Image (cartoon, one colour):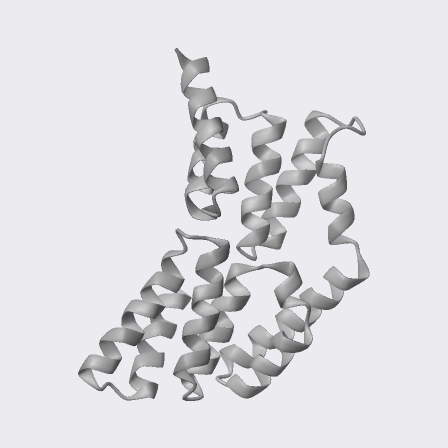
Length: 192
């Protein structure tokens, strides 16, 4: 019984991941790990979900855990950890973190500049596209904002943040909210 639930959750997680729904894949792989906490493959795939959402520290911790379970060269966690050590990834993280600092200071133009200098498109990190959307919106570039949020949704169809940002953007158009009022609301939701 438990084994069949495990397999069903795992297979749904794979289906969601292949179907560009990182959010639901993450939920399924977390469920797998509640049943079988040492599932190397589920740990690795959950790590990929977190990586694509921009949670690099937790992804790395999971891949390190996976290697503790199975240190053989066949464990894909070795590949994933090697990716984190690549120069282009380190450059991305440096610019990403610098951009986040500017974002938190509400220096949206500088944030955008940092993120666009980084290899964001190649990295396909949903959070980075959401932040670019927020910055664009704050700068009055609604069309660009919507494009960034749509890109985030292409990568993760279940991305609740991007869905909410697009919905709020539409509501703002219909209610004629000021840009800064909407950004304040969106930032409040984004921060937690």
